[in-house]
Image (tube, rainbow over all chains, first blue to last red; front, side):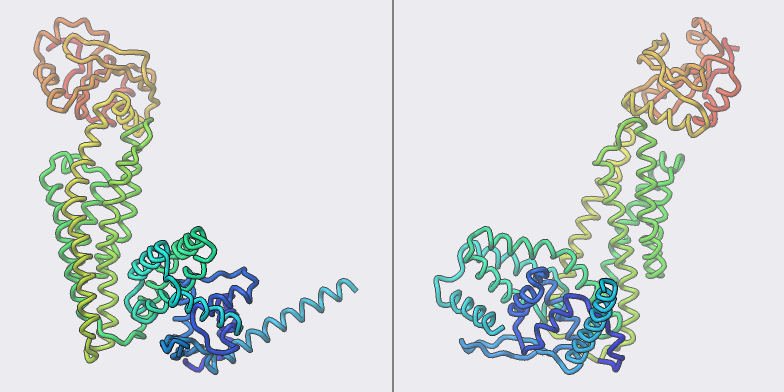
Length: 114
Length: 397
């Protein structure tokens, strides 16, 4: 990926954020990502395969994730996805951005209530 | 997360070891595999196998909840399909334009160029050919026919100037459609435009949009291919497959050219002629012309009969003056009945007791008769239908 500033990539779309978040705990196959995103978003985001692989394709192009081979218990190999260094940094930056927003909002709301 | 992974692997194991997918699952997977062919080639090469794998797992899991769940899984994929397809095609196109996909597509561009050229020759050429041998269009061109002629010229000019000709065709196509709708509404007057006529005009527009789009796209891709150079060979399998798609595309376009266009234009003309063969439609057509000429128009109280016309007529009220309209099955019958009037035969001019100075006008298959001398009405009639072919006096001079 070209060395663009991390903050220039933000904010992320919800789908991108949840996919990166899903991969933050380790490499995953597409189906597991799909289920995990549904679980992380409390069922709010239900990814279809078209949307999922469209997003994965863009993340691969941007270098935020990598594609690796994953061996199954059956001996069959299939593709899985793993967060790259830059992807991890972007996820961290987005999380920090969201945390900062939340913090400001909480201070204001709590201040107004006080 | 590990439970999800375990669940997935368990599911997969169930599918592979158990009784296998049900008939419904197999149908859903087969449908999904077919749908995957609609994605761009590069995307398919990268993800199709995985997507099918993922869908199979999802369908397998859904099947445990019954048939409805499998159907729901397939439907949810189909619902998001159009947008996903559009986005992927645009994204892959943009990537190719930026030179990110490192494969050579010069062969495809060459084929696309010739598909565009042959189609433009067949579509544009056939339209111009029909126009050249159609007296009605040459003598009385309407805005849609003029734009259609321009479209045909544009796609033919795109042989030499791909981007300009293609862009012109893309821009003029919707204008043609809109003008055709406007013309249609003026022809049918108070009658609602038929959906068939709208579909026909849409088909014409779509044909030119496809050709224009193809030319612009070819120009764009040729530009990028020139930057990439030809040093990267095309994989043999890719080349073979792309040729299949181009051949299918070409056959589709040829089908449009040979079946749609030849049917469309004569049918359209026929429908316009047919439209004026009915009283309501004809009166609407006449009314719209008169209104365009600045008159206040209404429909008269009833039918009228004249001894020298073989058909009954009806009345139009033009700025308070009565104009009679006699409608024939076709133009030749109207012309035959107009002939003795035009040649001022005594039987008509001297044996009829005129209420006022008669003025005869012929509009296609309709003969109009105005008996009176109101200058404003005469001017309006002339503005709407041209000068009278006979009349102006009460008797044969």
